[in-house]
Image (cartoon, rainbow, N blue to C red; front, side, top):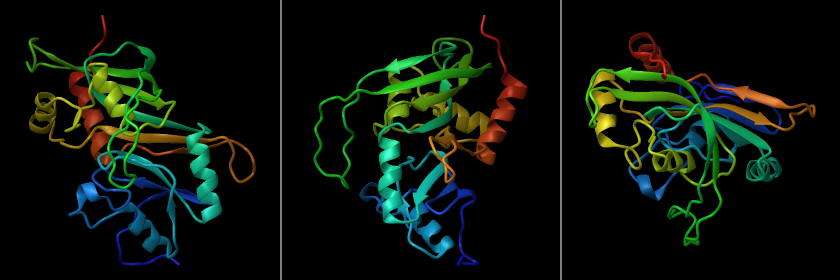
Length: 247
């Protein structure tokens, strides 16, 4: 049964074991002590939307939009959680970052755990973390933000090979290409430029594809999530007004 008249999220895919929804930026996956004032959660919305319990099997940060998976029963939750943990699910993200990264490459930098009140004390010993990246487009705005007369940005495709918390945001920041709109690991001056010049203040990070080793019939399964309208509109503006070629 689907509840009518209540908030819903677009369903990208559903079968007997899971449902994949398109989470908007600014929505928590579940209740968190870090955001005690929040009253909206994807878990609750999808539960009410489907009229049944659902189980989160992976995490998207509050500011990240895109494909989010919930299991429909406890056995599927265990299996899907294990699939994410053992890299049987390939995750692809798009992000707008400061600067022009190399055309492609791998960020291989261990990351220590990020404190999480839900999980409790954790080892702070850095753990292996790898993120593959590919540059998709480059932009140049005729505005001085740092020491140069113009400001350069890029659209990149990111594929995390490990699942450390805030991995993409921390890896890109550590590589001097912080994600625009990231208030924790990003650069305030560049975030302000996008807010004041382009009218966007969200984190410009979206999960645009999930690929599973096996679907219900045993064949590989790929689920795509188009960038949210505000993200897609920004990309269209950047491409039409500020597209640039790397020399």
